[in-house]
Length: 159
Length: 374
Image (cartoon, each protein chain N blue to C red):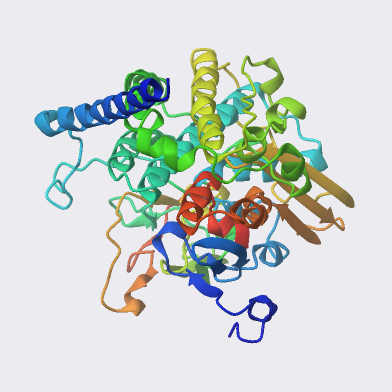
């Protein structure tokens, strides 16, 4: 009886190994079922989803105008102090009244954890997440960015 | 450093003390084990923690009730959706927010997809631990599909921060249902390959069966939860015992094995994958229409008091305990992470066994070190 069980065990063992090796051999001979993508060779065809959180950018239209009022809601919503808004006072040409506007929208990419809370907090939809993901630079100071373009101003009608 | 500690004093002449980690591939992170050996037999295993301690609980005290949730996805990064879910539940309990039904279904769907992704990674890593490299690539093939689904709806692949107090951050992507159907179809076909490669493999069976036995009484006394406790015959599924969201309306079984060894822990997780898949199948065609987020105030202020909520992550019970003084930030936060209690049973399981089995036991515990070390 002992011999019978012993042979049974050996036979089962060989069978289980052969089953696994057959599966391995299947993929060895079926190259088309391998799904590995070769980065960066596929860079031109790489499609990232529209909601992908790459980095925060400010939306500018063709007139170089944005929708940021400088309310600092995003600055308060950020858990890591990634955003710092420097404001100034613009004088309205027609009425002569002073109006709050942004001077610099500072964004520290090196501190950002891409939690999307600033985008959720923005009441005017002035900022969004971009699809870029290759963020490596040679100098750390290049990660601190100014999001509003030079000479840009707030779009008329945005309060 | 350990010359002064009691471990060395306890050891008698002829004992060997080995440090495994903190930089060791089989510990899956910066876990440091000090092992006392007599020949090849393990006399004692002592885990040393603190290498990836980020004081998350203290950090949360300076963050608002909206902000602290994102930090928890960095604890157990393989079940980040479920961690965020637990925190959202606790804040909602304090504010008495009614979550819309659509949001509840989305949350449960995301939880179960996370559980599948986590178990797939564990399956691949366990195979690698015991010497089989092939399973790793098979597991990552299917996990990649889940990550793509997350990326499309939530924007990120690992640390999502998708669940917010009152619901979820954004509505489901229009492609979500089609993608999940594709995933279910592929996963059902390929899941049999998992069994062919590892479950029935004789080498794997011999490495796992009868190794690292944990009795039901010990599992309770060490506070083990999740698949580790269920493999010892202890019913510990929070989804069944304390149902949250819509889990009490769903049809699924709590998987329980009784042997308590590494192989039954393996079998519990393999069967749990099928249960998760059946939950997803029940829900995916019946997502109700409606709001995905309840209306909440811009600044959340929890009333004075103490709040506790628990969820079932891929590793066990995850508890969130918030003490609020009525302000915008929590006064104190405590997280009950499943990995910490499961790790404490390691010494009991490994004692008396061989050093070669230690890696198999650690692999079957499914440890995530940032979850243990917070």
